[in-house]
Length: 142
Ligand code: ZN
Image (cartoon, rainbow, N blue to C red; front, side, top):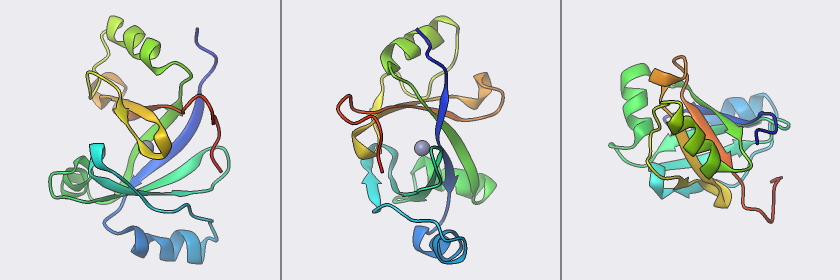
């Protein structure tokens, strides 16, 4: 069952989280989570607490990180929009049945104990869409 769709976060590719925080934290006053490395994506992430829809800064940790390749091709900027799903696996099954192209065959571990996958922009109107499922015990993160 589809119980509506909520934006979890907007992901922004940056060369350096520390440098970006001069604007986001020091200039705009956002509070910022601890940085966390996400090995499956070869990125370091930090979340800005911007209400229910958070802002994620992603810094590549390796030259072959998807974020490194994105920055090389397009420069820093908005990389994806993430939506919460309560049942990632059935959502992925439904999307596959509809012919949507997913980035990974199986969900991958994301930050904060989440499971994630992405819909390829080729089948989602040019927007890279991340789907996030939180661990059952803690639906919301501060
Ligand atoms: Zn994200």
